[in-house]
Image (cartoon, one colour):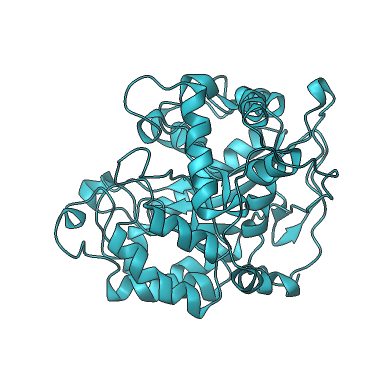
Length: 375
């Protein structure tokens, strides 16, 4: 059904960066991760965002916005009268694109989610997009359509793929219809992997990927999508590395921060951030306050999180994955309208316009186009 077409506009000439967030990703890793896109069709550009106010030059691609969960499970109307990332807030915040997850909760049907649930949530996303003319799916019936300059492009992911343990081949049709990222596990262990917040992660060895989970991850890569490591246990992350390496795939955490600054199992240790950078992947800055800091969160704490992630993983490996509509956003960036405030804070911290364009959109665009097959 859908696959959003995003292109990469030439950035303006960048000014030297006064502060020194430097890339650590190797040229070889970047080449390996980018290789599949050499056979992909030339994508049309992202919808243009009016950037006249304040001279901002960035456009946002948000790797994780949980609006479909609010509609499907929490009875929010498809008209989206409220929310962290409504169409109006998204345009005001310079959004060019966002990723809607097909989030399949572990607890439904007495802890037995089914592939049919993925289909039902998929239908809900379809209903949202039909109701919201400014949110646009670009692949319809397997064909790419243009995105109007006044619209926000929509990608689709899966979060919590435990239901697919019943038949891992069923992931093929979801990827064929446009799913770009697949989170194997969510808050609890399943038959594919152990979760960062599951029971197995608390034990020595942590469970990791099951044999079936390893087959599932390989299949995701074979079909041209990427595995999302957000919510994976540390051992599952380690188990994924050789599989990703086999397929030349970048490792992606759509909405996870640095554990060094906020010691939470959902965040990434420095060693994992380094692997993400070295494989040409990205880690999406999560704005759910629990994953930024205990207690009151100020903008300086958000900037500090970005600084650390950039220092360890590299400027090419940090993106935005807000978790809007899925958690409690930090007050300084409480909704999509506040992205210009974050950009301003990063400028004041010494980031160049080129750096900001990478963090807010260009890095995400690169991985979302990994592995696409020619039309």
